[in-house]
Length: 220
Ligand code: CA
Image (cartoon, rainbow, N blue to C red; front, side, top):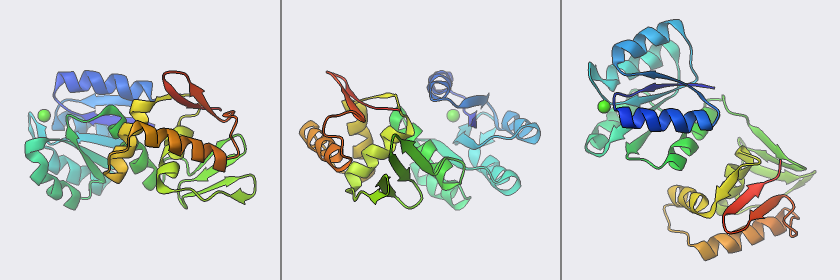
């Protein structure tokens, strides 16, 4: 998956290039709207991360062009004071927006969700005999459907999106908080993980591994 990052702030560029590459995305950075236009004319990409305040204009005109001509999903990266403008961005067809400074996990989770919604992410995730369908939100173990709570589903979805990757408790908590809008404490997380394992028939923690003192890891 290729992401075009349109941003003029060096610190943000450095951080995002590192983060996105770590997550397996190819990144092309444009520092101006003109550069982004030139790039879009010769290359395709799967998603655009678009800053609103650019040296040669704002990101809105660029967003309009990207949507009209290339139909690529757009996520606005916006400063707090530009939040009111975001409605305008969404009216132009942008899929989502993230307020700077953002948490890395939050951004990655939004990118994945936008890619999934636009049909670019995988719909069926599999780990061992567990199958998760991101379109229907259904989880199966073998042939049997496993009813999950929203919280359990959200955690499983994150972990199944990156099998083998360590998810720290802090990361999981940050992710959950983003979705439900409610604060979830550490104890609730432990209880939820226990229930999730029970439902998945994983009471001996062979599928969702505990990494002591760190967090959890889904077996590949
Ligand atoms: Ca800027």
